[in-house]
Image (cartoon, rainbow, N blue to C red):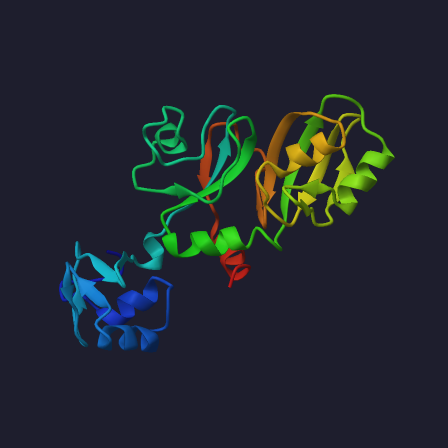
Length: 237
């Protein structure tokens, strides 16, 4: 445990360092009996030693500096699931040394950027952030598109019983374009194109909020930089 010594670290400081609340709020959680150390209800003044398991309301927490945030360039054929019964699951493919899980998903037949983390406290926040924060994709369709296609896509088309939110399209070829979405409906881009009579042949996510895929090779991953992590987390507060 980073930042501890032989005498351990005060429990309220440990909880606060996980990023879930302030030290004062941690004191309140301890007083309410919602904090355990190695399964035993903790009290004010408790110390956390290396190897101790701390849980708040039944959820294990770790100091922020032990949290992992990864950008991965998902290949085609890899499934965004933690279920090891699926031989193509993303966790076994990456083979990371700690337990991590994907933030959201990309279809098995789509590729590109997906984030993975062991920080369960931010996953729901990031998924909620899909509505209102930008995600950018590079898309290829089966035949040349025209200005009417772009206008319809940008204005919104019916998908899953609702009209998609306005989006931004930038042409990148007669059959290829970049699209920036602010929502995350199931198979949204494919359904939008299908509604207009086009079939998506390639789909790659190249950006999630402030995180860029860049020149990361297919099948490779990297840690987020400190700057990327700070901007990402500040964007979902």
